[in-house]
Image (cartoon, rainbow, N blue to C red):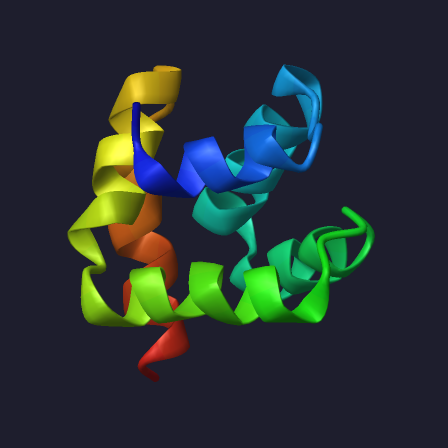
Length: 83
């Protein structure tokens, strides 16, 4: 299992919320930050999660593919953020 998804499940985040989070990451990354804040993950685990993403951005792609979402949208969102 993807380590990002594993951390979310460890904190009892539902599959529905996980899908919502990664859908938001693909559609609107800023909205995803709001969703992350509502998940109730303790700050130290949230830091661990963010460090994982920063050190290995490919994990997002893996998680998106594992969840069956459209990775092309992730690439488009990333390009939008870089502008």
